[in-house]
Length: 242
Length: 67
Image 1: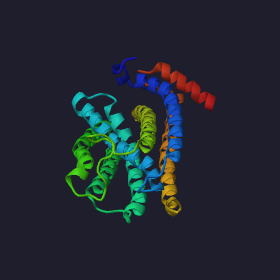
Image 2: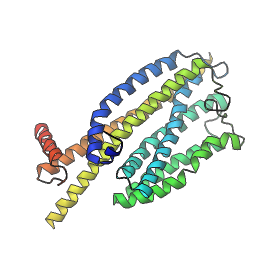
Image 3: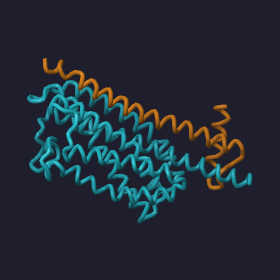
Image 4: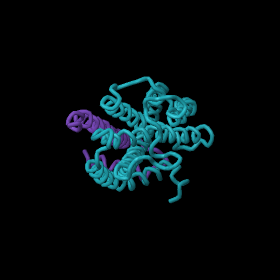
């Protein structure tokens, strides 16, 4: 089955039904390995044991941004290519991305209190991440406000493309402004500044979280396709009755 | 000493992660069951999509088994 075949909702459902159990299994294994590595990782020489919060905080932050990036591609798919599953992908990525962004904000606060002495500061990185969370809520609200999925898809796609401006702001906020939040330490020119005994568990956890995101997204897309089928049948039922 | 002082923050972070991930998994699974049940219910009442006769037969069979 080619990628283009997945544009057909029935073929996508068959693909999702086959793939989700396997992806779920691989995700569980990745988390078991990642959590084990995270627990046995040494304490940081400055931050001590609180570095273990990083194994949750950093992957959550990445996935919050990945979710919006995926929605941005899907928005182009909706507006430019009119791909039949693009708006399904965008709509279902929003709550998952919002959940990971919320987790990023919560774990960041819990990490900030012992390290910075405060749960929250209005610095550029934290504020732009909060803006991303609010954007997610806005898109979810928009989908719920407009009843017709195709009209909602176009409105949400425009908001998504506008909101994509926040992604480079989040990424480069620590370079453009003076922030309490540290600068890039994993993906940066000159290589990571994190010692391998902490970096490797972090990357394994990031992989596990990404697998979780993909599994949940596939499952949520399957649900959305079924929901639209139910909606179509109910409209047919109402038309037949009137 | 330091680890003990900050243990609460670490535990709270992992508890938040379990809650968020657990919530997402529950949302997806419950929604799947609800949509499948709604679809089967409609198809048992004779409503089928013209483009999916094979799937509708299967779903009706599943609904009968579940009933």
